[in-house]
Length: 449
Image (cartoon, rainbow, N blue to C red; front, side, top):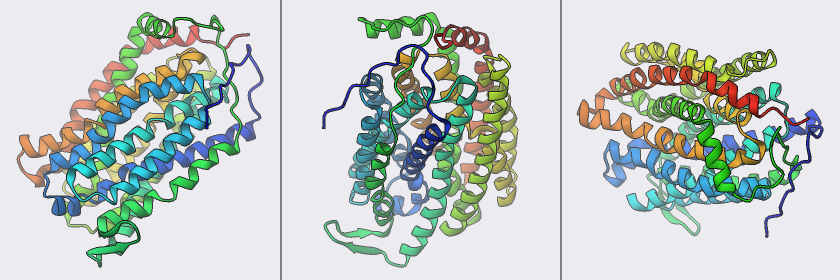
């Protein structure tokens, strides 16, 4: 079906009724939850995949990060253009369909390169969701409510991560008794392949939920022209004019995402290798501890930042996250090196509270500092950088430390500690340097009267 064009909103219109805006947020939250579930379940399947495909930690990390992240990043750029010009609901629906089918195809892969290609499909499909979701929510909530709304949306990633641990661990244990499973069409598959099939199939229907809410229309900000003939030039010109903000925003948050993603994807393997925990035990503990910490962090950070924005603090997002990322660093390092699984879980919980709301906070900062008609493209550029260098590289940096620096699978905890020790202080410094530039960008993009 042809994508319908959505005309830009004329001036400052009334925002949608809160109940409708929050319903839309709930649907987007559910789809984000699904995307993280499909993305991260591979972290619980490291051992059987390495065994059956005969690959190393570093090769496995490419499936976790690069195969997914590189194509998420590349596909995000044209999808950002679609978000700014066509129906955001259809863009999301198309993305959900692609990534859920690709997850099922992961279950049909019988070689490393088949699995690599299927992971590319997961990344390409998921690239459609966040730029469209950010744009829809920025047009549905006023500035002093946007961070809380985006923090709630970002909870989808936390619940998705938790459910990837919980459901993945349970499914792995349920199917572990059967080395192979016989399915219609797919034929005989390994038990770890069955996990991808079970988790991927429901998403094909869940994507239809985007048609249960209306697009709120695009809102103009002060000084924004109704038409722009040189769209590329306008985007580049805005990036150049506010280059300090974009460099510090993208650089600071990407560094922290690298550490957060490395921890999320390698934590199950760390517990299995270091303490010989079973998949079910790992899934239960990480799922409960991670989800609880993430929910607390998202709500607290969203409320704190919105309260500061309401008082006129335009740099609140960068200021708060620079502090929380700096505090998280020694906590995680101590938790990794202590040598006790429950100390690690306590550190994991604190890290979730402090840094897991990163997606909602970084997205809200960008929406407030971007003109409404450029949000899709500016978001896709940020996601290109963050996914490619953060989510794409984070798992591989950990694996490279383990394989090439320490040359010992048992030193995975040292690798995670080293990544946090490097990335988080640098992130805090870069975010601090961008505070004044963010204030100027947000002031320029106040809603039109």
